[in-house]
Length: 360
Ligand code: NAD
Image (cartoon, rainbow, N blue to C red; front, side):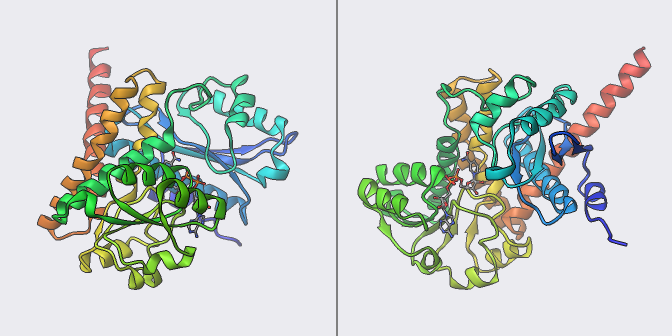
């Protein structure tokens, strides 16, 4: 018998609720993982991609949902974490009936889950879903908020914090940027505007050309970015790029980037720490995009959101300080901060439920 990984993982990661999606008529298959709603409704994007099996799809949703809880809790947002996955190739299998069936499933959760774009799901898909559920974010094309700019602004503040820890004058820094897409380009512009020299790599030549022309960036081949001698390496493309192979090649003093899930395994955080390479935990550094929800839910104006994003610098500096004092990797410190906040929040919530019952 095949042993399913998803169910034990849901228990291990402490998921609140996992909804499996199957709609016979539209062919929708997927899952909505609600990890935690201690501090508010759970938020997380919807991802559509092919998976080897249904079990793998659910496992992806479970891991990503937990990461959302950690990100939201770290930046003290009144939200919890969730994530949804839809199985299938978005270029061939994303149909209107499938999106409608999915939107109806989101609506049935009655506001416990808010979702938006992720890999394979675009703004125009949300427009289709909008007629069937209210529980969507990032659906407004005219919004003055650009989540990729906010994500880049948080990374920029993290790099500024790293420069302070390293005792370096900011404008004399050299930063190697992996991926010059939406986040990478905004970051490059912010850095160059502050006199920083950037070296970029991206397999998309139109993007590297734009960076060379508009930002006077030095361009290297995608694989060569790990060998660049610089002060900071900033990964802004994909996950898993801090591993045994790449860490052995890096010639930088700090790693601060927007990509999610940068460490291939948690032990790679310990290796970086033992090499005295300062690593900004990804979910702390790249929380700028998520903070845009404060604008969408009318809890802050644009300036208020940017002010919150700028706090990412002091936040990561505080984690590095504790990491130094407690002689543990920054990722471990960050997880501990989140877990303490969650435990405290859960205690307060169950206490108030207990008191309500008593008063009734
Ligand atoms: P994007 O698709 O606009 O840009 C990613 C870039 O990486 C592309 O230009 C792509 O060509 C490039 N790339 C792919 N493989 C590469 C390789 N081997 N070497 C170098 N470059 C490579 O995506 P984005 O929105 O800029 O997001 C980048 C990362 O930041 C992702 O990991 C994403 O999950 C994360 N992130 C994004 C946001 C946001 O709001 N956009 C927020 C938080 C985190």
